Every structure is written in structure tokens, then in C-alpha cells.
Length: 488
Image (tube, rainbow, N blue to C red; front, top):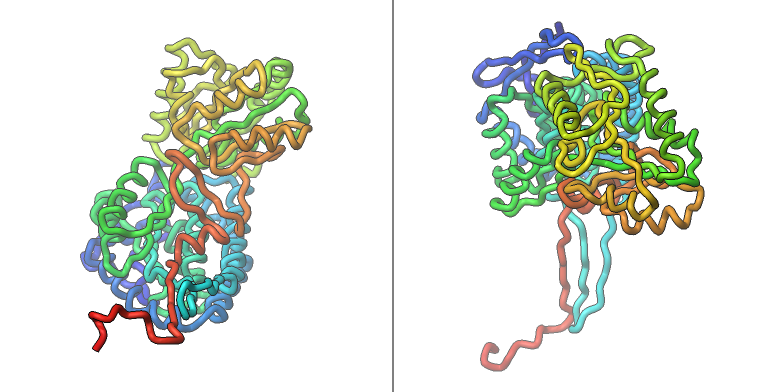
């Protein structure tokens, strides 16, 4: 069992002030996997103070040292990818393909952020007076990052790398479900890459301390942005706290993402993408395909083939290279999925395949006949339970897709590209992918949702907006026109 009894603050590994730890459980076994440092309010206060002290020098260093650091980080990830992937397999139940893919994605975020260090633009605007108007972007100061458990390494890296590239310093608090892969492992990577002291600080904590620490990570006077990826419920709490303290909030929350399969789609490609989009990482991904909407002329064929594909998916031990669907992160997650299945059946839905629960594993499941009033329709199911709908035509398919409080990602399958673009323009979601899976992201492309899926964007120009402020510097070239009663 690996032990991480220390926090990473000011470039050093130090014990929590109270000397306390908590136990990190392995999802596949529900047994202790690691003993982890449990930060207190005082520890996080120290980390934020350290980050505030380090920020001016990091900003003044300019883009070259920041880009160099992030490129070294990417190189360390590449060198250590097999070992980093092992942590993801055991700590969060990732299958090996997902774990290795996450390492590739994390390295991609580091490289894209390194390029963004050079991409910040200003402008010179005309003036109504004899004045030079210079518009610049400057770092917000300290960025607080609270990262998720499901894709912890790459999503932590996404916020951390861009914040650092733009001249901010960071305090990162990983999820209590993934304190190593979402935080302490990043600290090791940045330490190996030669990160200056205080630029990145990592504080892990147990669930008991989350609320108090989360409030501090918003309220500290040096914090300019709170970057959170996780549930809608927690995002609303942090967003409200940011509003009270007049801080920027970058919130990537849940999704009830829909894939629309139209009658002219390439069915083989659509099947592959839908199975992957629905069941990658046991469906525990914010942009996973939760609702599958099929146009009536192909509904019987597509659904029948989909059922056979899902029935063939192997679920179980994530260390088995043949496993496609691993464990659910915790017992609470299993119970929520089982409740959604029971709720759907009680209200008239049909289980097409799956529906069973075996310890930490939920069978890959398809439900038909799902509708308004069922949890499987309205709630984000973070697991391998998916609803299949039949729509009379494209307009009805879009109406079903838009019948959600969420709006993160979506997919449209059609051989008519213009038709797909026309439908995408009416799709109430932050991202729409035509002839692709809902699980689609590129490190330099702004990523995020609408409605209850959050505010702000991550990646490229989105991260520049999140982690910098616009400032106006004006230079007068002649005396200002002061009214006579104010002149000397």
C-alpha cells in the first residue's frame, strides 16, 4: 500500500500541521490502497500564502521559463507513463487503455499550455482624446484548482498547466477519491521537471475537511480564480462563494449528453462511437453518452446491434487487459445507479441488456421506454446505465436531446454534413460533434458547457479568459481637458 503522508508546499514535502492521514480505497476491491496526508485549514492557508508570495516572480519570469517548465513536465509524463497509468488503474479503477490515454492527454495539455504562454495578446484601441489606449492581459494571481476523481491526472493537469503558463501560481486540491493521481502524483512530476518552489502547491484532504478548505480556497485574498471540475451540486456552492467574494469561477460540471443517430448515418461507425462514448471508464465521464436517440427508420436495426455489442462488453477487474468496463468509484455511486434502474423499471421502462449489480460492478445496461419523470432521463447517471430512445425524425430527436437541465457535449450522426451543422446550431449544448463520439476534446480547444453544465471554458483561448484579467493602460500625450473651475 503506497503512503503519501506529506503535502507538497513551497517545493517541499511536509507533514500536515496536525499530523493526520486518511485512507484511500481501491474501487475494484473497496480495500485500503493508500494512506494519504489530511490537510487542515492551517495547511491550506500556508499553501495559499506561499503561492501568493511566489507569484510576482513567476509572472515576471516571462513566457520562456513557463513554457520550458511545461515542456519538461510533458517529457517526464512520457518517460513515466506506464508507472503513472498503474496508479490510475488501482486508485480510480481505470482500465489500462483509459489510463494510458489519460497520460497522453495530460502531456498534451502541458504542451498546449506551453504554447499558450506565448499566445497572450493585447491591443491598442483608438481614443476620443489625445491618448494611447493599451489593452493587456495579466495573470489573476493565485489560481485554486479543485479537481475531479474520474479523469484526475489529465483534468488536474489541464487547469494547472494553463494557469501556470499564464503567470499564475497554483494551489491544487485533488478529490478525496483520487488524492494521488489527481494531485500528489502531479507534484512528483512537477518536482522532477524542476518547478520553482511555491509555484505549484498540492494539498490533499479527507471528505471531513472539504467544505472548510473549499471556502478558504475561494476566499483567500490572493486567489483570482477558482477552477473546479466536478458535480453540479458542489459547483453551485463554489460558484456562490466566488460570487460573494467577487472572484472569477471556472466551473466544468456534469452532463446528460445525448447522441443523435439519424437514418442516413454510417451505422458501423456510429455503433463503435456510441459504445465507446457510453461505456468508457464505466460511463463515469462528464461528457459520456448518457442518452442514445435513434431516428425511427433505423431504430430497430441499430438498437438490436447495440444490444449485442453491449452484451459482449467484458466488465470486472480493471487490471485484466480484456476488461472494457471497470468498477464504480464507491458504494454511493453503485447505489445511485441501482436506484435509477429500479426507478425506470417501476415506471414502465424495459431493460434491454444488463441491469445487474455485482459488488463494485454495475453491468453495462441499456434501458428502453425511458421518459419524463424517470431518473434515467433527467439525472446524470455516472456509470454504465444508458437510455435508448426512438424519435420519429430529426426534430423530435433534437427535442429529446434538449430536454435536459444540462448542456455539456452532444453528437449527431449523419452523412449530410450541412444537415448536421444545421441541427448542431439548435443543439443546446456547449460542444457538438458531428460523426464523432461525445467524448471528444483537444487540448487547445475551449472546452465547457451551458445551462447546469457550468460556466467558463478550459483550453486555449478559454483558459486565457479564465486565468487572466483585462487591464487598460492609458497614456495621455497632451494635458487632459480639465473644466475651468478645477484649474489652478
